[in-house]
Image 1 (tube, rainbow, N blue to C red):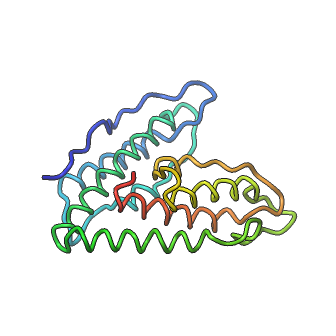
Image 2: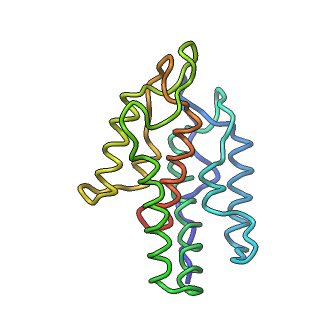
Length: 192
């Protein structure tokens, strides 16, 4: 009935020297907890959700697991939890209601992103570092094109967004929160 968690092996490859690495004990503990939560999933009182997987963070260390491999595993894990959540909503409310809820979430995010370029998000003080405004605005223009059906938009693409630093740039927290909402909306709609 539900999708299986596949290819989320608690033993990820070790990072190569100088590459970004996550703390192995933290990753192993989280994956073990996620497997238990998935195997014993309770729709009314879930021990873990897709959002929990999306928001997990690990310490950066030397000689840890390769961050790219862990991130790929987390993406699959998030999608597995999202699929269970979606199936429960379909069983409970039906496809039409799920579709309406997904569309409403995506419309809400689209409205948040539709501001004028260079003023879509709050800025940090001129002496502080934020996200480069031109990078974020270019990315948001691509997102809006996807939301308007002009191109394909996937949560996996949004997750990989990287913005260069800039003094006086956009507030990183504000940008990250909106992108997190967008990812959640896309995952909920099945556009993982």
